[in-house]
Length: 305
Ligand SMILES: [Zn+2]
Image 1 (cartoon, helix red, strand yellow):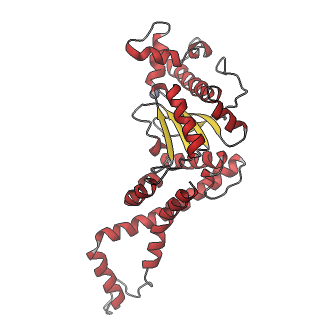
Image 2 (image 1 turned 30 degrees about the vertical axis):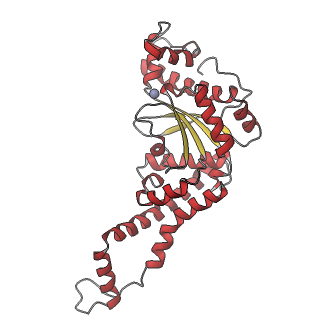
């Protein structure tokens, strides 16, 4: 795994190193000058015209470098706010680091400045490296909803997120097995159970009440058993607000399911090597609201506060 990480780190650094090596001294030539252009500048221009792909790659590398710096700044800021010490590359080393990188990635997504999920020119080299193994630092349990593309939401490239998607973000036995594989064999440091506003699965369960849903949809009601009873619909409360409370309560309950129904997850959490965090995604803003991590000792919430 360490070897894979080292290779992945090289892939991030390589384009920048290549750019630095190909840079030439600044030219004295000014547009409009009658002075003859220095030979180096002329050749450089010719080279660029001959290789437009390389020019585009250099521009991408410079942009990537700037965005990586911005990412580092955001991570520092988030770590300071959260009271955690920042160590570069710590997303693969600790639950705190993993969570900080997810928060930083989501901030990039919200601001429209995705970095890691836009490194298209790096796809070929990345695939070749990842064909040798994977070391995803985070497990994301989220809804199958087409708007919940976690690689975009957390701005991460291939090989960084281990994803389980089920309608209503309710992990079944196979989902729990997938989580256990990731945290035990691949070294993931955080499990995020990500619900979202206006979730169709939660809405279906809410609207059907005690009436069984058709086909296999009854399994959603089974997975969310106890949810409706745990959240009181206050008199006069708008349905949208009630739905938001249900979505949050469901994320919390499903995060509890992960930790209480998996002795492997529970053990790693107890040792401080893993954390399970519920969260809610806002479809319009792209913002992920992280809730406090769940502990194995805490009971399933009976009612929404
Ligand atoms: Zn949904």
